[in-house]
Figure 1 (cartoon, rainbow, N blue to C red):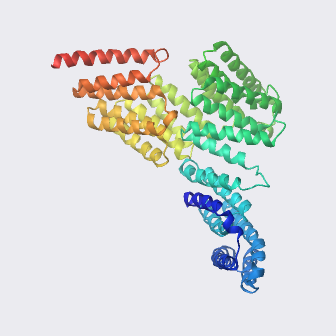
Figure 2 (cartoon, rainbow, N blue to C red):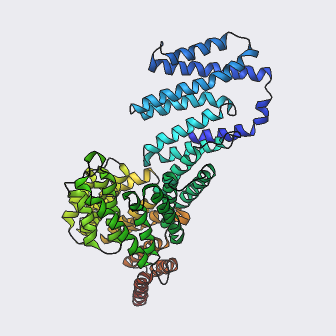
Length: 526
């Protein structure tokens, strides 16, 4: 529906000259279409609101006016009536959405859209607003509806280009949400472009950006994208700007600043700027300590428990990154067990998941599984649940329960495949392939690896060469196990070409050993 709508919008744009030539025949045809859609909308709206509702009466009155005056007079009445009808659908959709019925809201908006589409240029503002509303609803429904959200948002942006006299301020919201969608699904280049466009639009509409929290959020998110693309210098610029904005809004020692400060520290670590990174982490620790010290004297209703627990998780992740595991554990345990704080489900989920990773790396698999179950209990998001499934399967592999691990990998794969999350799909397929390799199910192992490579190819420039090198190495190991040493060496050669001689030196050394072993075994077999 949405893809078709975008094509329709573009084709209508090419017909602008034709629509300006309104002969009596064309106007009569338009009138007939309006009658048809008013009748359809009356049937739908009256069913929900009842025949005596004011909004239903409005539609009925417009139907009478269309049927009674001469054709020459009717087009002016229709021009006034269509925006009113769009408001009717908009209000009705808002009402059912507030009652939790998103599916019904979407149907109502699409019905209103079909009426407005009869004259794109005359109704462009209303079409834009409905498309944005549709995009927002799909966006809030999460990963499963992201593709529909992008379709609606793209349609709104097409219409936005037709708004000559009025540049809508909602474009930066649309672009910001699209950036978040692309970031969540691993489409990092598209995410970067969306955030950059959002920032340009926002800057054009706002002269004063110091203390502007929405702008601060946009540049922080753009920094996150740069990190995913390993563009650490660019990420550092964005995080520094975000810190500046937030400090202007809240003050330098506010708990609100801690997320951007820890992000900057992480980037400095990647750039091997250890001293600057530790300075960031110490600043974050001081801010958090001050916030925790004030808990006993703060009136509960004024306490920002959610910000404190989120900051504990952020700092815990930073400590884990630099190998300070004990400090990381203290942060996560505070979120999970401290009776002074009211941790929300989202923060409990994050802390439990991170603690699960730590305990699993320590070989405490039963504790890790308990933590993963706790994480599962604190989320209703299918995306987050699938992430937990993947973590559980990895623990099962370490415990040697390969059959159960494959079943859980399949469960997670079904979800991520349904939402085209190619990065997650590739990781799961690679893990599953290695399980098949360990159980000597070599054909299925290769099938998994091939599918993983296809998923990585979908990511284009977003694919990380190191991961491709690891995948090719795993494929080479399977061919070695099958006795196909020439093919194994070919995979090892491709893997080496994916890797950086300095940053990936450890893996390169391992591959060279495997290649030498394959060469030796090939010679022996001859």
